[in-house]
Length: 127
Image (tube, rainbow, N blue to C red; front, top):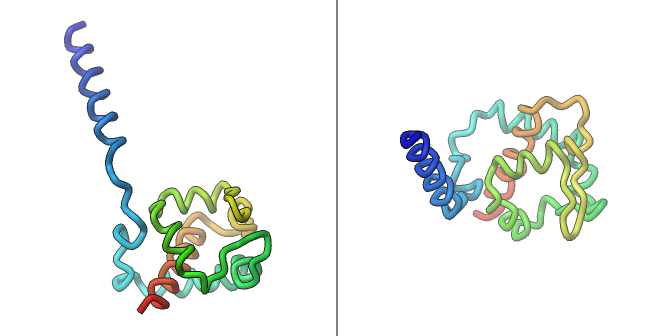
C-alpha cells in the first residue's frame, strides 16, 4: 500500500512538472535542412492536390501560404498538435480546417508530409 502511494505521488509530481514545460515549435523540433527530398516532394503533391484550394485563396479563412507571420504563430503549437488539428479538423478564430484537410484518401503520413512541406516553404520564405 505504501509503495502504491509512492508511485502515485511520483506520477503526480512528474505530471505536474511536465505540464509546465515550454512546448517546442515545429522549427525547433524538426531540422528542415535534413528532410528527405521525397518527404518534401510528396508533401508538395498533397498540398497541390488538397491544400492549395484554400491556402492559396484564403477560402474558409485559411491562412495563405504567403502569410509567414501567421504560420510562424501556429508553428508554436508544435508538430503533434498541428498534425492533430489537420487530422481531426480544427475551428480557429479566423477559419476552419476540415478533417484531413478534405483529403479523404490521404494517409496519416501524407498529412504529416503536407504539413512539413508548408512549414518548409514558410522557412524558405523567411530567408
